[in-house]
Image (cartoon, rainbow, N blue to C red; front, top):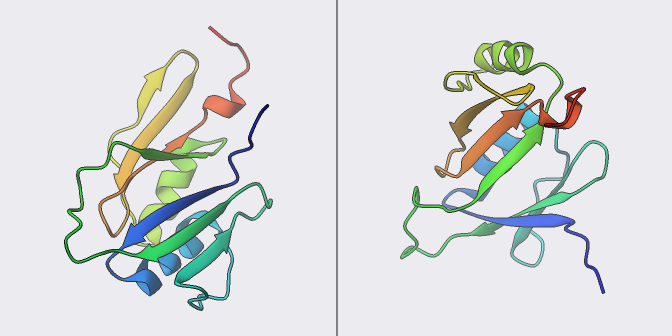
Length: 123
């Protein structure tokens, strides 16, 4: 038996701000309305959803053990465009035929842009 990973739930202090972040910087779409306690955003290609859930006041942010990876063909071009929109990534790293860079979302969740899916040779 197999199961497809089709969505991720993110806890946010400000649901609307987090939704706007993923819409602006990663092209997710959605109405932004809270339905059944969630804001649902869908990737441009329909491959997955991000469900934004209101975080409990007791939840501590910034200590996540999960990183969201977004596949991009050109890490440097994506970083440049993101910087123009106010989002800044750290240094670009090289690894086994691909590059990646890290950042944080408004709730300090770890995010990464990576060209790994587009590399031409596998190690």
